[in-house]
Each structure stands twice: as C-alpha cells, then as structure tokens.
Image (cartoon, rainbow, N blue to C red; front, top):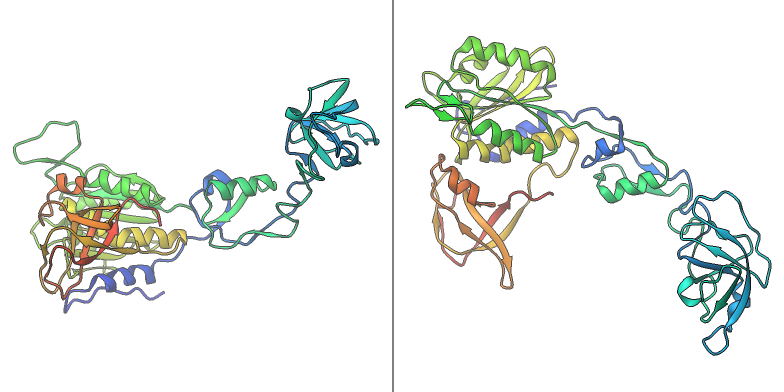
Length: 416
C-alpha cells in the first residue's frame, strides 16, 4: 500500500489530512464474534433466517384455546359454557388435539392445540378450570401468533453494514444466532508526553501540571467504540519514549500521542518519529490544532496519529482525525461526524486561511436549532471545553459571522 505523507511546502487542509488518514488506514479483518461482543459494530455479512419466527403457532394471551364457531355467539347475556380438557404452558412438550365443543386452558407463548383457531383471553371468562364460562367472543384467529408471521426462513434479517444494536441483537438471538461476522474494536494506545506532566492525585511541583489529555483521549476512544489503553506519562527523554512505544506496539491497532509535535527543543515525538522516515509532520490549516503528524511504525506498520499537547487542540484533533480512523477500522460509516446548521446567537470572528473550530453550546427548542459560542479561542481553556457540547465550524475563507446567521455545527457526544 502507498503511504501518503503530509506535504512540507504548505499547510494541509483539514479535509486533505483526514482523507490521507482514511485512505491509508485499512479496516480490520472481520471474524465471528459473540453477539454481545459485537454490539455497536457493523455486521460484515448478510444474515438470513434459518427458521421461521414464530417457530410454531402460539398463544398471545393467557386464556382458552377454542374453536371459533363454538364461541362466536358468546356474550354477557348468553354466555357459552365449555368443558376444559387440558392445559398448555409455555415450554410444555405435550401436545393436545382439540375436539369441537371443548376448550384448553393456555398460557402466553404456549403452542396452540391442533384444531384450535382462536384464543379467548382469561379476562373474558370466569377463569374456570374444569369448565369455563365465556362471555365475549374473539374474532376468528384472534390472539394466535402464527408460524412465520414475523420472519420466514430465508428472509434477510440484517444486511451487511448494519450496526448491531440491542434490537438487532435480539432478532439474531431469537432465530438462534449466537455469533456474527464483525470487525473487532480497534485497540487504541494513548500516550501523553511531557516531563511536566503528573498523574492526577499526585503532588504538583511549581512548574508541573496534571495529565488531562491521556484521560480525555482514552475516554473519547472508548466513546467511539474502541478499546483504549492509556499508557502512563512518558517524559521528554527520547530513549524513554522509544522504549514505551516499542513496548506498546504488541497490543496496538492504532497509536495516538499528544504533545511533542511542535517546533520546540523538547518535542520528543517529532524528534524520534521523524527519524524513522515513515511518519511525517506538518501543519494543518485549522485552529486549534495546527501541528499534526501521521504515519506508520513497527514491523506491522501500525498507524500512529500524533496530536498537539494543548488540551483543546488535542480534543478537536481527535474529533477531526482519530475518530474517523477508528470508525474506518471498524468499517463504520460515515467516517466523519456529520454537520448540522443552526442559528448563531452571538457574533464570532475567525482567522483567515484557517478552519476555525469554536467551542459552543447547541440546543433545539420551539424556535429551532441555535448555537452559542462558549468561552474564548485559547487552546488551554478546559473549563470552556467541558461546558461545550458542539463545535462551530467556520470555513477557511470566513473571518466572522454575525448573530442571527446560519453556521455549520458539529454536535458532540451524539452517535451517528
């Protein structure tokens, strides 16, 4: 496979960089997975029914299986009396053949006796055990679930690409499928770099900060459906970073790093990976999140996406580039989060030549969809990021939008 690298003569656009990632990362190969393991994954086969559903005529009510002609005239004023000649419960293997002029007491889900064509709900009777008094007639065939009325043997239950949710899982289980072909959840290894980082709960020095990025990115990967492995903090020492990366490749389908990709003297990710010749670094015309890297490492050519270290930049970059990569690996389309349009409630500005992703709060009320900017442009403002549930997207050629105008919005935390 040709591995597309980032251009060095100019910044990439957001679309160029995400397409580069999508086009060069392959979907993971599918295999048979137990149903519960495959929830949230697209099935990689057309799944057909190997049996009818229901598999046999059964009762939809607790009541009495009868011949319709025997009870057609039943009413409060002229009740019908029938002898009860047996009882059928769900899971009972003994079968009855019903004779005209008799009734069989039957429970919901139990097989309807041969010869019976209707079920009288117990509420329309006196609940008799030896004899039953019926005061209301069903319509012919009422309260009988007939063989194959839901699904016929050979029907296609799920088409290839259908995402397996609770309802689809229930359908497969109901026809006896215990597993389904699906791609596995990608194993995503998250690495935060920086000698200034400390684990939450540890003490802080005067020049240290807590590592928020690896927790945020690992949570984002899990929310996307991946298996996330958060690696402990790695310092700016090149040997330590190299060793940590080497140790993690054995369990990685994708590696994501944050920090160390800019132009500083201690940008360890860029320093180590650039020497490999299989990972390229450059700028993407976006704010926040300009410095980016992408490539492949190790004997198995494991893809690696390197994100900037400022928390907001890291999160926005995950949404733009890592989320599509994860969905591509799972075969889950669309790869990119779709945009919606909403009315802007407060004017915002943007830098020309860059695609702006502004934190915002999106809501729908009786007046329609509208969106309000949250906080400033600073890529360190975690409080504002936490308050946001959307990103306003301003194109590269747009320098500002006035209140009351329509804008494009990425609504976060929403499945698609």
